[in-house]
Image (cartoon, rainbow, N blue to C red):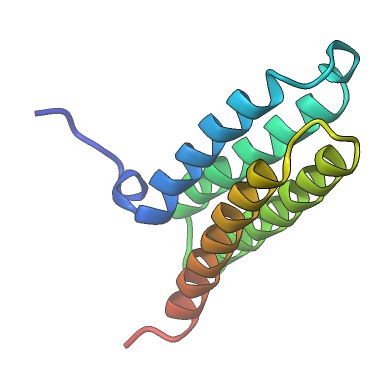
Length: 121
């Protein structure tokens, strides 16, 4: 049986990977000239959510909270990228709403983790 890291079992981590897949699929339809601008920024921000969840898990509680806060900032950055893409008509309203729904869920889950780390029972 393959060994795993603790963070790999976290639902928020799994959902963040799903969001990366969504962003990569979505940005493939952006105009070619955006591939080194908005597409790249959007993909990096989406990846940052997962990367910070995983990286922070190995440190102290204080460090983990800081990495989760960075992850939350990346979630907000993705919300901005979503809005820009919608305003430039690179995505339709259904895609915008799907993105925002996933981001709100990730934000709530990340905030919940921060709260549980600050106030262990």
